[in-house]
Length: 327
Image (cartoon, rainbow, N blue to C red; front, side):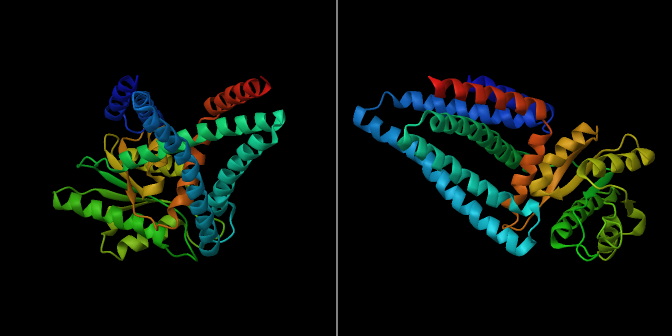
């Protein structure tokens, strides 16, 4: 079974790497291979097998405890450095959630209460489903981020991320610098791509984001006629759609690349595919402290894009957990 999932994953990667199902297929491949290893372990000497089973059971618990501690620490760092916005609470909340699931399992074990046991089973199933999707997403995001962009593009789209006091912050500067590097590579090969800076004006921004981005590029000696401004978008989907409209007006057959930060690359790729944009997404480096919370935020946003599937799976898992708990 693992081989079939692996073949399906490889085929999906070659056909269109901008699909979330590729991440799920990768996760299923790894799970099947792991189950195969566990099956082979049953052939070990009984004493060795017992130690192996103990390690297999203890490792997830230890991993969750370490992960929870890391997320809690990162959550505190995010609040201290980035402020008390709801988006900055995600890693902190994820750490608390990990500890709550473990606490509920321990409570169910010692209380012998049917309701507590049922809640523990349901929470474990839901947490397992989310953990599987998150690990699959994380692994595939690494795979996608290592795919090299094909040369020969006509446009390089740079997605906005917000200004700070009207200035380009380090997060956005990293995107622009990566785009400039791609632009210079194309120029050295004899091509002349256009840089499309995409971002509208937020309520707390004195100028449209794309204008500040253009100024950042001009300061790096990019010719003004090589910069195209898209100044209406407020979201990633609008960044992609509005930029595509500008590109189609100039060259309907042109290929492009989209530049954002590495944590945002895969979700931007999904948006590009939905919009019918012919282009791969490249990621720029992100500060280490910012990456965990931002990655969780991207994962939540991707899950929100598949409400029917996730609601169906959650309903089935809850029903199964309740049935097991009642028995």
